[in-house]
Length: 149
Image (cartoon, rainbow, N blue to C red; front, side, top):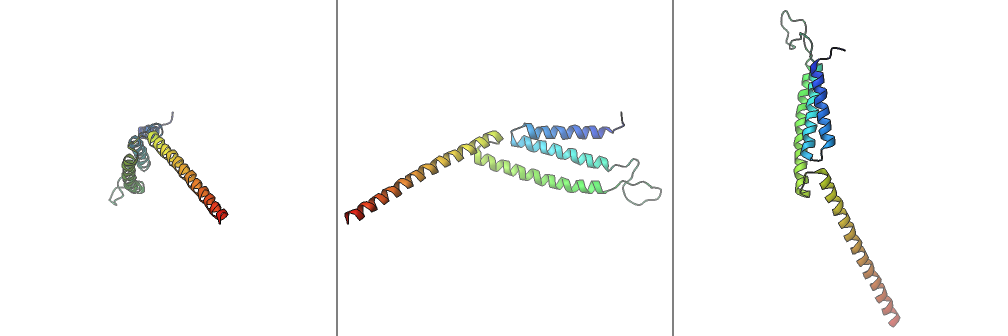
């Protein structure tokens, strides 16, 4: 078996747990937690790839010949900020969905939205039928008035 550092196995398990949480749960907050676990796994993966054995911080000193590359750390710092913004936006959307539908369960919110669309379509159909009847009655009255003249 190849010598794979344990951090990569840990990162893989963390990403799989996060992906499973996103796919399997209907609760929107649990989906956000799964998304965060997946993001943390990606962050740790990139940081682990940037590790150089016996590498030091990229500060020029005498006697130091091997430096770690700082780019992965800088990229992950930016990704953490984006992850925080994504999480806060997701939580704000969950709050709005709860206010609109009274639930944070995905299936229940979709069912309530579909029911509202059906009710709206039925109401629109009844209004349209009523308007057509009014138009027909108006045409009949107009014809009757013309015939009487």
